[in-house]
Amino acid sequence: LDMVAEGNLDQDIDVKTYRETRDISEAVMQTIRKLKNLDQSRQEFVSNVSHELKTPLTSIRVLADSLMGMESAPAELYQEFMQDISAEIDREGKIIDDLLTLVKSSPDLNIAQTSINGLLEQILKRLTPIAKRRNIEITYESKREVSADVDEVKLSLALSNLVENAIKYNREEGKVWVTLDADHKFFYVKVEDNGVGIPKEFQERVFERFYRVDKARSRETGGTGLGLAITKNIILLHQGAIRLKSEEGKGATFTVRIPLNYIP
Image 1 (tube, helix red, strand yellow):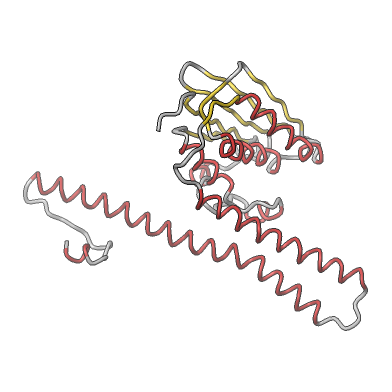
Image 2 (cartoon, one colour):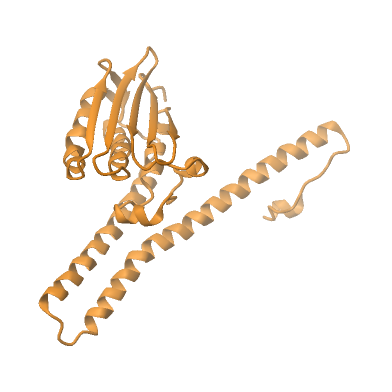
């Protein structure tokens, strides 16, 4: 116990002389395992933040060094390199913005009675032009009028991330279905697509910060690996839940459930 108290979480505690001490021993070991997992998660997060922030900077450095090494390159090439540098700076800014969003996502919610129908309509109006560029059809079905106690700004961000992902990780001329329903306690938002899907072995980890199923494709579409982590955090702040159902190559379905009446 003294070694654990000093910070050695790899030390086993085994006191099984009596049933009471055995139960205490098992309870303490469970707590230690949770602390170890939390510590490992924090270390991975710091490592991932470092990697994600360094990647655009490395690209900028390579591009800048290439520019400086050119003695008589055509203006078009300079312009192309500067555009690439600008894109990497934008990516760095987006990562920092998403990190700040995660840090600022506190239990303080600006709760107000909000039309969920209107909120979804605004989200889809904003994202439809992005879908049209890839010939992706969005279908919205509202099964009833829904009004709920939510933080409109935060919830809009959470649901936007789901719909935007359904567009980004879809195939050309794919489809996205958004459905709103409710019962006497909860409202439900379902975002379904017929895109690339998520393999079963990765589904439990997609809500982790910086976790990507396909790293190359995520960077290609401009993803930071933080969108689903932000979404889940916001939904949990609303006392809600999110569920994923997916099959590789056949699309993904995210279902959000949130209470109609917020109880802090």
